[in-house]
Image (cartoon, rainbow, N blue to C red; front, top):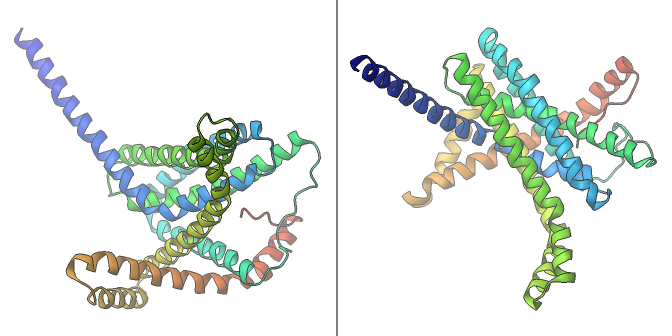
Length: 325
């Protein structure tokens, strides 16, 4: 009996340790996921365009197909690669983060440049003219999964950098939880966004009550504006996160002057308001300055990408670079 009680006590101890580990993984995953907010918002803002133009009945199957590709990107490719980096080349994480941050700055700045100076995307891969719907769906899904790979790489790298140093299994579990949680959140949100106008139209046409029909009509009218707002928020988030990644990376590499100036200016702005609002105002000021830096860097990168990188890529591969956004 004493042996059984001792065994049960050991099992209870193991269960407590396991529960604590699960709590640690969940907490670390939540913090790491929050760090990747900018790339997550951009992912949610970009994906709906890939189902634009298809029949309503094909929208959810396409989103599910892209989501499965996203799970594969994060869990089969990027998670093992991230763990190998953390184990054997941790010095490479900061430069890779900065490369991803530069990509976000370029994308955000180019979106703004397109609004200010409308022009054709001469460096963008042109899709074939619509023909067979199945072929077009295949093409759109493949393009979305490629775009997801880039954004997922940024998300997983940011998450990896945010995870406190621990054993490889804890890091793997945390990264897996981040990958699964973000994918479910992004593509669940995309599904709701894409089908919202259909729900509104159904309510407007078939609602039993006048209020239901009015809400349905309001939802249909609101969706185009909401999509524009989502694009604006996604662009701002890209510039903010991209800029902050570059500034932080420069600090890690020993070039801390820009980060210190931004911090000091944000603190000076925060001191202009009450103590209760100081933290929020400092954060907003720092985010705004990171975003302005990201925008400036992105504008510098536009000619570099379009006139140098893309032509070189075209010569090497023999085809135009496909652009995700």
